[in-house]
Length: 166
Image 1 (cartoon, one colour):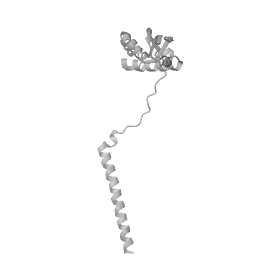
Image 2: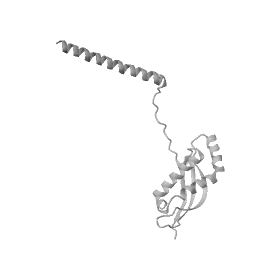
Image 3: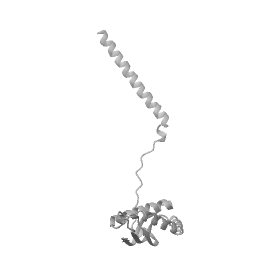
Image 4: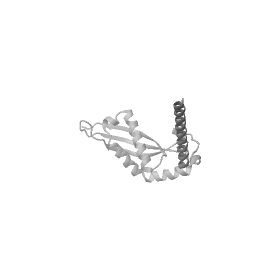
């Protein structure tokens, strides 16, 4: 019986030591992290409003002709298109007007960005509706990056004519 009582005392001592260690480490981590003063209530992610066609201000980049990247047959394919950029007009008027002025002065930059996207696309990548939509998304992100603004929300192509080379 003495051995079992002694073994029970050792087990209890080890459990108390383990419990003390867990509590000590927990208090240390709370102290290092600054306690609850840094904790904030989780917030719902920002809801991105849907911009309807009536909420757009359209800027035309005009007509462009681009030589597409060489395809598998080394053909020199072309794309003739017109590009419209849709700006989010639901923001405060002063913010929209400021960006509109900046964007209008930067139309040569915007045209250059569009052409840079197109020269890396092949005829097979742009000939379908899916290819056109993918190209519009790429252009939208490139323009947002170039102008450092999320006010650019749509890219549309009133004219789109992919021409196979010889």
